Image (cartoon, rainbow, N blue to C red):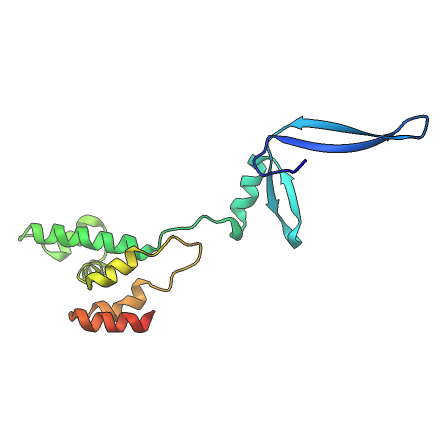
Length: 160
């Protein structure tokens, strides 16, 4: 019987000797959910789902993929830019205080929103990952400060 993760049946075969010395296999079936967990030195353990979740939460290899932070920053920059352009009396300092961020960070987020549309689209298409992405705010700062979209695209290609 093949065991699959998440299955509800665990089977074990025992051999028991009878008085006449013939070996008869017995099958013991126990209904219990289980999961496989890879431990130290590649040892695979069969454990309950609760214990598996506790073990996996501590191991790097089981971390769930996350969206890159830069995606959320672009989205926030776009909403801040809309809010700033919607109210002519609103200053950048007031907007920054309202959202609880530094004025310099507000400026960076708005620069991200003003970035070339092709670059923004490329960043939006980045898939979630368990690793840090190669595109971050720090790496984009020199690119986004330039207002020329063609120059931004050239610099972005060098970054990739």
